[in-house]
Image (cartoon, rainbow, N blue to C red; front, side):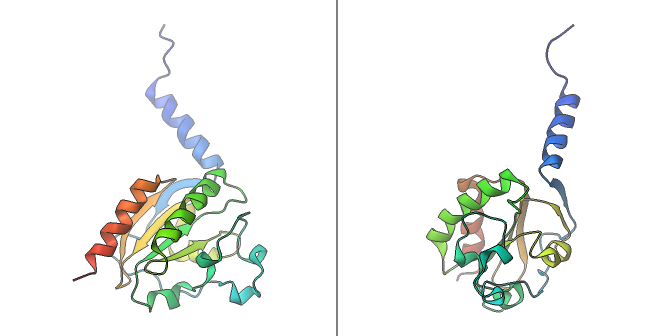
Amino acid sequence: MSKRIPIFIMSLLLVGGLSACGFAPESSLKVGVKAPAIQTKTLADVGGDFSRMTSYRYPDERMYQHSLDKALQQGKPILVEFATPGHCTVCDVQLQMLKSLVNKYDPEVLFLHMDQYENPGAFKAFNVKGDPWTFLIDRNGVVQFKQPGRMLYGELERQIERVRASGQG
């Protein structure tokens, strides 16, 4: 009998492990549709108290400046990151990586972090189950990219560049 683990069992272990972190590969919001223009919490709404915005230990205030509805009115690309590091270590890693992208693209691209504990309405509006999830929205408010799970810096940077380039001319 072979000592190799059958692919089926490996798949079950992977999905089970991701589910334990809160990740479920489901969202019915499709690429090509308008992003929901909903009000989300901002740092100003909570008097500058990060603990009322996020379970992230090292938040970057630039990711908490805009409500989604107001961000959509600015005519800039928007990256919305659904991540709840309070129960998801993969989310913590994802947010660390995003800080580097914020440093590179702010203020040309708006970055919004949605924590499930503090912005559950955003999770519902995007029909996100589990996290992390990354959405890129173009200048016209249309979802151009969505990806469940952790992304690498280069992968996400390519998508940001693609969305930035699509609206210039």
